[in-house]
Image 1 (tube, rainbow, N blue to C red):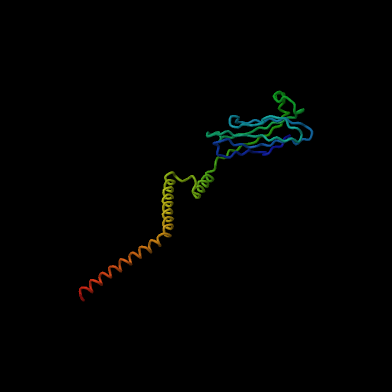
Image 2: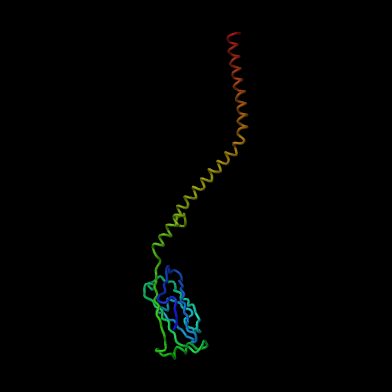
Length: 204
């Protein structure tokens, strides 16, 4: 009476610290007959279904959103199922509450869909942590980050010193030339004094 997608099973994948949603597509493949549908779950406290009732015109499709509430208990380890019921309807403008009360079991078509809860895979979690370490991400400890900051500061100071040296090299040649001239003058004065003393001692 109805076609379902997926047909047999809904898979909810962790982590389940927040809500996880899946869609169930229901279609009325008929060409003339309207069909009313109703969806139930064995775990209404865990799954939020919207819309859970409705009427489908011929060849009409509806996407039912099924949301699994955040859970940290063993609810995810239990077996959960969804039951889809359908019955022929006279049209879209019917009172669905009264309609389902009046239906005989023999007039109701139904289908069951299993629910599989898949927890977060440890291998994926480990791979993500390894990638974070490789990229130098948030896996670094605070002490390691502090050490990296100190090294960076020292490198910055060293670079500043190199820049100052390079800037100073443009001035030093001039100063060096002046110092050499003064030094040469002093040497010549000393030599002249020594020669004069020697000459005076031996020839005068």
